[in-house]
Amino acid sequence: MSPLALSFEHRFQPATRPGLRPLLLLHGTGGDEADLLPLGALVSPGAALLSPRGQVLEGGMPRFFRRLAAGVFDEADVRRRAGDLAGFVAAARDAYGIAAPIAVGFSNGANIAAAVLMLHPEVLAGAALLRAMVPLGTPPAFRLDATPILLLSGAMDPIVPAPNAARLAAMLGQAGADLQHETLRTGHGLTQDDVERTVAWLRNRPQPAG
Ligand code: MLT
Image (cartoon, protein in one colour):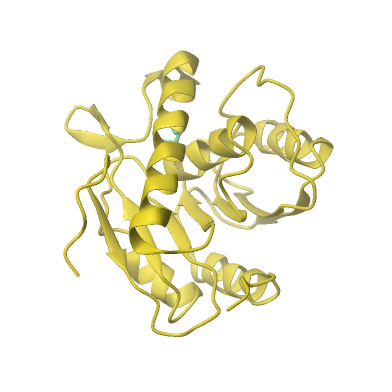
């Protein structure tokens, strides 16, 4: 299917099996809308896949928001871009007739997913955050009552310090999320372990009716 003209360049793959939550795939820095389609197909075979490309360019590399330095975010831009992404998801749901998605984000994509959870908590049905860090130092009060979230961190991650991942977990947990935080014996890159844990977590998620 050729993508409809929505606010983000994106790929959409319709579901081939009924009753599975759609996945919103959010790539890392330098990725694009094609990057995580294979991961989406692996972790939830047959689910609809919605995969936008980040609209910020850093040295030609797409990202979902601006940063001032490694790990130092332009929080005004985070807020603006999270709003843009929330608007895209709403428009794409209408256009493609899909239920609220579960985000599967890696690195910068996981960070924008975390920002959407904090700023627009109604948009996502859940999120698998792979190597996420705190996207906003002082987010507004937000509630995520029973929203399922899987946070997979890397014990040797040079980009996301363990205390930062722990702080994100605390913020999500305090907001009432149904949070599962696991620290894998790996670095920033994704591993087969990430795939297997995401598959197992998704299998236990409530699926939309019909
Ligand atoms: C970010 O900038 O979102 C994080 O540092 C992850 C990255 O993209 O390197």
